[in-house]
Image (cartoon, rainbow, N blue to C red):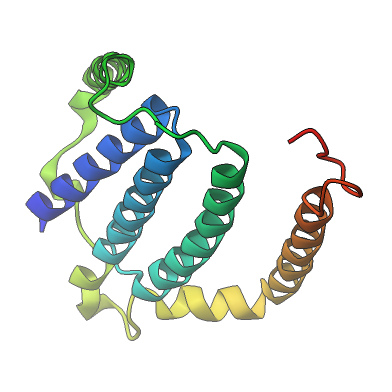
Length: 173
């Protein structure tokens, strides 16, 4: 399980580097999907499958909207790919930065700290994520309602900004 978590976290960092180093929205959106999937994989590995499923569905919906909006605004015929020279230079610089910063914090990590919630099952009556789901719907119910209203308001704002050439805020685009 430790090796799988190392692979998931390495893929998470590589996805973050792909998002940060690429100026094209097409390839950056693919990097965001990889980052969301690996982040949810970390949550599954630590005993939160329901939370990771909810987050992954929310991330995919949000990234679909962001990708469609940015692809419509940045319609370039030949976007820069991961193999072009400036993108490779940025990727190398970011990976060197990640290695240097992780070298500062390397001494505190041990393999015994990678214990998931379900491995301590003999001390609990419930699974690891059941208590969190109940708490999210009982204490955080109002926050879910407020978040739904904010997302609806954001949808109307984006639709108003991109309404058309004669009536919207973005006329020159």
